[in-house]
Image (cartoon, rainbow, N blue to C red; front, side):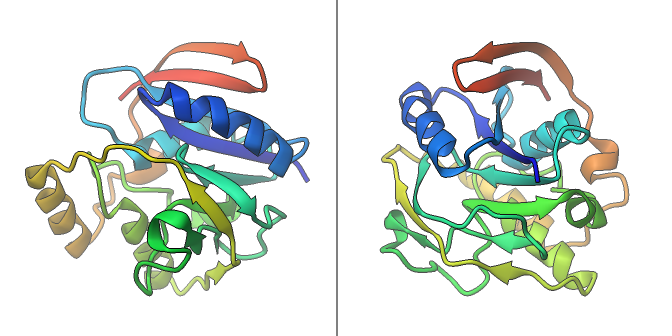
Length: 206
């Protein structure tokens, strides 16, 4: 089974230098893609993962979508027979779940699983709630998820939360996802693709 590893990225060079070698060891044979948001808009993690999936959809059997500030310590990255949450024990949360329905950090999906919910919403900007909204999509469609205990080291970073964006994200989360959203309505422009040592860098404008 061919694994595709995706991460979303902007201005985290130090993290990337640690993350890529760690992932090459943790997921041998995986194809690693770093999806960089190269415009000046607010960072959009969910949409970047959608772009990465669309860009690699014909190349793999399953996708690992992981934050660039998480280094695997003990993680089972094997094929997911259900939509799978892997970041259950990260050091930033004291190696425990921060709340019961946490679905962030790292997940694994097959094509069919990710397509079943039309991927992430494209409307969450800045920090917060796009991963919870994805979980809600699975729950609303009656698709069972699973959690595989995974231990991660969280790399230090300064988190800047725009209160206005965060409030908007919470309002989006509370509502119903519009039909014109997700993978089927993921407008973007790929402005460059470059093969680096151990990974492929894809630069996009959203």
